[in-house]
Length: 273
Ligand SMILES: [Zn+2]
Image (cartoon, rainbow, N blue to C red; front, side):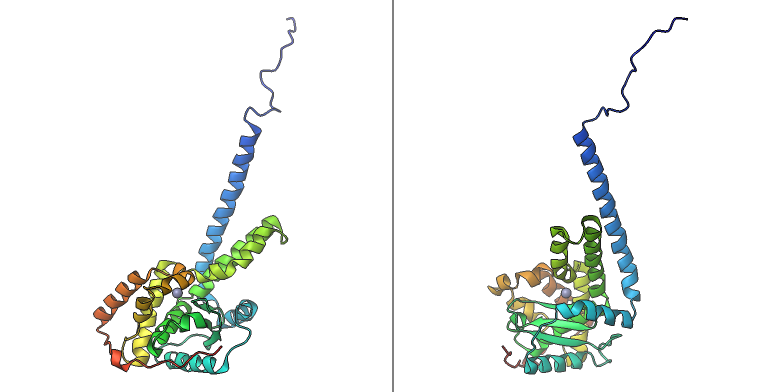
């Protein structure tokens, strides 16, 4: 048989596909993998958060919370806030695995948040919007609800995972991981609507328990419905809309037969600088 040389039918070394397309497929695969890892780790955080020991939370508190705690605290406002918190967290109405403490911040941003280690930070900007101690007690009770449900540890875990993943992939000196660690405060503040509703219901129970009535629970959101909405944008962005919260609270007050006595609301002291 005579040998007839033939060209190979295809060249395995040259892809038939456009190289740019392959790049995007690869990039999509890597991104998809990272997204999957993020969700799996996030799911693990949900499993682990309720099991974090008080000792570990205390350590996390020292590590993370200290950078978010106000540098200078006004002593008289802080002392007053801690008296109100002590009335709520008297073991009868609320107890936690760690002692809880509230920190006064002179920031004008309308905000309050719970941090690991039993710390609550409340800004002057939010305090100025409150008209009674009962309203303040509800806001603090809401943050205590985040402690009870371990929301503050869950969302922090996701933020940490995200920062760790970006550092792993892109190194520490990249603008993305800098951006992510810079935005960790935001991620640690945003809870799901379900978590927020649970914290509202918890705050309402704590208020009723400590003050013998639920007056003041909806008032904060009711005055936020006017021009102050704009100033509170950030607080509201991480929380469900005010009318929804008021509606839900009123429904709970009716179901639980809680009394409302607006004549018994306790006035607030002036806030420090
Ligand atoms: Zn909240």
